[in-house]
Image (cartoon, one colour):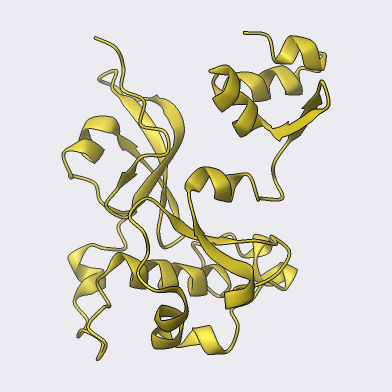
Length: 201
């Protein structure tokens, strides 16, 4: 039976990033990104059956607070907004603050209030998350849009770009075009292979 590819699929509050080994039973594990910004690992079956829905931030002990007056505090859109604020908070221990607050990436004053964020951006589309047009600038209406995880990944400063035959794309884009795993291409690049050999299937 062929293994299901979970990459880029969204399960509740988790977006699958890539394969991440196997457990003791031989089940494939997947690295996922929670809407709050934290990364976690889960088996494919647990994701498909709804056993794992978040990194843990949506467990009862975290959601027992009273509903906010706007009535949207348990929605996916609110979770995305909260994750945006957490990423830019240098005191949030679970976030990679050096990629955000320490680089001066902040949330605009207007968006610190959820109602304003919701008025500008509306409901989060099912298969999209919040992304920034310019990765060096902060979160505000002029610099943000709803985008797929692939679009967001292609906009990160950690991307490795490959140029071949006058075509320049990220490893993720080449992998999608050629039908080769991203990790395979990345490994070849790290080994110092020539560009043409890196892209050979």
